[in-house]
Picture (cartoon, rainbow, N blue to C red):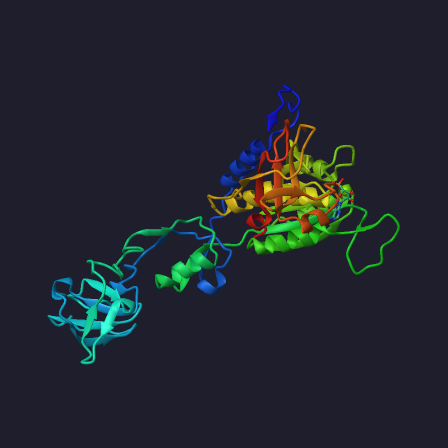
Length: 408
Ligand code: AMP
Ligand code: MG
């Protein structure tokens, strides 16, 4: 990667990380504090509101990691041992009788007095049913000690953790049937543009179907938000005012379109009249223009309308903002370095998020990276990040952000 030193070239544009920092600061200033207690089955995708503290040792008692025999090491002299009990998972064993061993199965409690478990593959059962062992035994072998996963009083998950199948399984393993979670964030979605109509209707001259609405509403639902789908907003100041005013009960108004330079910016006018407005020109491609403001106290994020721009700015800016509103600490997607399977001869003044895939260990990119082409993202597995002011040769390292990291 060859950084090209052109001071001032990105001067007018705001770096992506600055925009993210400002958005996260604003999210932290307006946290969602209300909590609800819900059964585990309803907590998937939601955010934990209180630390999850263990009320148990896990496992609650030492148990066997193998099917085999539980032994007191000192009793094993090479003389075959009598099997004094059989211990299945779910059983409550007797203390191990002196000079004997116990048949034991995976997950069963290790009897008091036993200090190792030998797997059945290393045991020999004689004609008289006594057992001897073919390998040396060691104290503690094949025993999962009490509390190896967690002990009483330990914080297992912190408030602000996003819950998925694994976290819910962990809660279940600790015996929790309900959790305190942050209430859903209410997001009002507006698609601006006189050219938009909904699928299902015949396409008139100059019209296109509204795709952003579907992208955002489905995505927000996956994110655990309460989506208030406010439909299409025509490019008209009066209707913009009315529609924004109708969304006074939401935590965020998320709109697309109408933020490009040169166009009648009704969203901006309405925000200026009845709230405040920041118009950002970001060093990001696709997705340069972004609006952040408030309308009568309700936060508003205006994403650019081109479908790939909407996707990239939602993934990298609006999604982290929404998660942070719920107290989530880890809001940025995982990104990892891969060798580029393409060249990038011309350095740009914006950070590019190319729709790409990994093939044979290298990032390749969709042939048409136009911000209007949503198909590029359907083809892609992730976003390939090319930093501003850099060129790439084949094999140079680039960051790759899997779409699976952000689409939930
Ligand atoms: P704008 O940001 O309003 O200037 O829109 C930029 C481009 O995105 C234009 O070509 C719009 O037609 C298109 N666009 C805006 N909103 C949507 C939408 N909801 N669905 C599909 N395309 C859109
Ligand atoms: Mg428009």
